[in-house]
Image 1: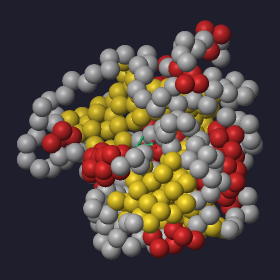
Image 2: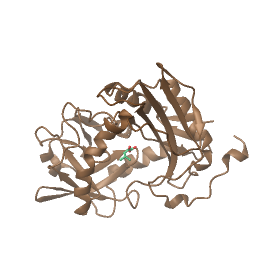
Image 3: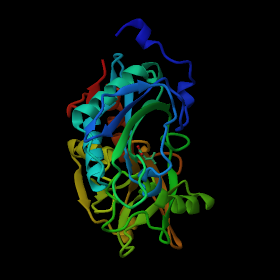
Image 4: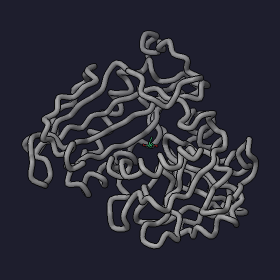
Amino acid sequence: MNKQAKTKAALDWKNLPFDYHKTDFNIRYYWKNSSWSAGELVSDEYIPLHMAAPTLHYGQEAFEGLKGFETADGRSVVFRPLENAHRLQRSSERLFIPPIPDELFMEAVHKVVQANIKYLPPYGTGASLYIRPLVIGIGARVGLGPASEYLFIMFATPVGPYYKGGFKPIKALVVEDFDRAAPMGVGDCKVGGNYAAGLGGAHFGKERGYPIVLYLDSREKRYIDEFSTSNFIAIRDNSYITPKSRSILPSITNDSLSVIAQDMGMIVERRPVEIRELETFNEVGAVGTAAVITPVNLIRYRDREYSFGDTEDAGPVIKKLYDRLTRIQTGDYEDKFGWLYEVK
Ligand code: COI
């Protein structure tokens, strides 16, 4: 990589919020007449959209979130992008969106990172380049049905931690009067509708001082589904416990942490997790690309509060998991599972 390409933008890298910051380019591909166009790098942040586009009316859209990092030895890497490609394909199939092939997705990741390399946060700042791919149904259509044309866009924006304070414990509220997803719905897909459905619960929690809310299964309100922004994990003795449910997002971070936990000699239990088990857990975390692992030190469920460890600090196991994951991402720990994709 030449010197020019490594020059970084003048940003306060250590204090970045998790928010949109303009970068130089996004990449766009159009689906027309049954094929994807060649990718076009553009600097326009806006998209021309017909007012009758099915994405606007019927929510025909799917998206992803992944992160890029600079490693200690100066490489530019993206964490497990192929997994995001595969999840986007699954979400797309469910919503009758033409799936984006692996090669096209990977080309987009490569080009969008390369074109915005000055926004890839320098090693050691704790920040990352958040990459947001989205695919939307465009073209005019009023009757209910899949769009005839699609737009696949990928943009990148430098971000800091999702929850204020970074790796600091937060408290959660179990919301029972809101559902994020239906049992046979699209809860296991990364589609905008799930997040729109979650806005009510999130607002309810925030108004009461809880930065994150926890959803239960919508059929019985007996099992833990997931948090508003991320998956649920719990540590009990030597077990890493996480819900198995048809209506939660298959989190790539959760999958990575399960592999790390197993590698650390822990037992991984992926199974229905009852809400009444809360009192048996030693540590709880919210895990996802944006949340990484955010320790949850208190959960309010009905009229009871369940505490997990320290109010100021994460528990020892979550600390170890966080440390291992983030060190792999920045090349400080051996990438023995081949999770880093290098952008040259
Ligand atoms: C992510 O973790 O990448 C997400 O898309 C969750 C979102 C609430 C930021």
